[in-house]
Length: 316
Image 1 (cartoon, rainbow, N blue to C red):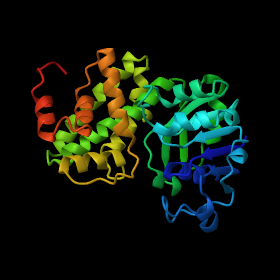
Image 2 (tube, rainbow, N blue to C red):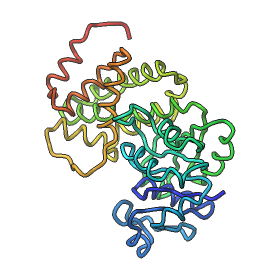
Image 3 (cartoon, one colour):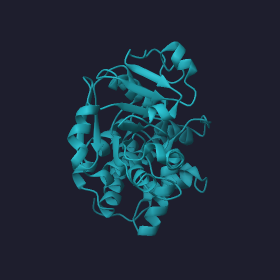
Image 4 (cartoon, helix red, strand yellow):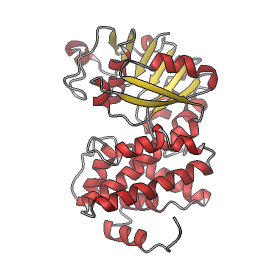
């Protein structure tokens, strides 16, 4: 089966490089000229040359002919992108490669695919991964969440010598794990940036994970999904590495320093969206609410910490 990847950011490019170890892959970019000339994504992944079986195109009609299409577009642009290209993508297997919750609808990537392209088979590929690691062939394991009828074939298609895929049918849990861990990563970055120390970060990670489990269970996810790669695994990576844009945003917030406004940080919109869902559903999500308050400048770091530390004492 043929594969195309729509979106030539760092993650989409990295997946294209890895999957081209198995066979022909097409990578669609809005402006592919530089990548065609250099045979690498010099802006996002310098030093990672394209394999011979990787073709770059700016023709979305050509790219959309593939049977399996990976959607490597930012979460907050996914709905608009799918609406624009719905006819081209009808009947395909569409695999979301973004993490988050849509700010306007409160939906995750799989739900957006289903509502935008009703005839498509919807899946999500998520888990602890940095684009540079995948592109350089470093061992990485991801979760593929999809309907059972396509799971084994798609798992085989997306597995490479350095990329190991585990499958689940729990798309809700996989979506939420990948989305919510970004919010916790921002909070962990704030703790480190504000000089609160490693112990504070460990506490934020742990209590943040409890929030992730609380919301996921409420929305029907299986508990074991959140303890797997797409939940705990991704949380551990994102909350502890400066390669994470969410963590770096949090550090800058804690320090009170500037952050590159042009960098896409999915956790920022997700925090706001999750805070709305939590309020509507009556869920106790204090770390998420603190992050949303910091992002909207309704709270400063000192008042956010006070609010968390003065909550009523309870059993763990």
